[in-house]
Length: 217
Image 1 (cartoon, rainbow, N blue to C red):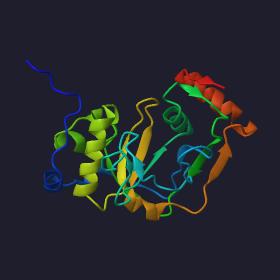
Image 2 (image 1 turned 90 degrees about the vertical axis):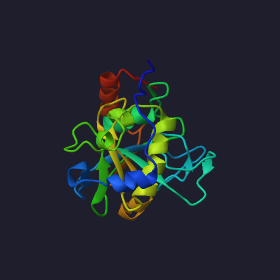
Image 3 (image 1 turned 180 degrees about the horizontal axis):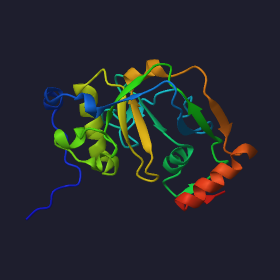
Image 4 (image 1 turned 30 degrees about the vertical axis):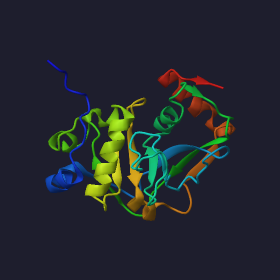
């Protein structure tokens, strides 16, 4: 008997649209919340901390259409975490080493300029959208090529939704993957933005590394 994949392929956009989004399956991110991201300021594909990326696919919920490269119609994505530890865990997941110097990474915290409405597929959601529409909570942990298909279909089915709230695979903290409509929610100024080499971040980075089992260089 064939096993069922952890994360099935998504329904077609028309089917997703028909299934809809219930009130309890939505999370509104308030303007008072602070969300975090680690972003590089040197090297290839550098983007501002408040800019959406239009190339890929690279990460979990990239909605960009194939072939890989700049999306032909500018579909964008922005990733953030609810805690600094979550942002560090996601940014340095490949070799589990927090490199404070290479490509001059910054830790930036921001609050959105307007409330952001997202489909909540995190484990603490009051609803169960992922399951109800034919998927699973492996949206947060499954293979990227499948979760990217989900992102493409979600963007087509619900073009006004700001994005998704999900769980970090590495830190467990809630994270956001925001799509093109959320561009209007990006603030002009961050709440905090410091290079990872800044002395004020030394204790925080060391604590995150201990908790995650990451190295620091």
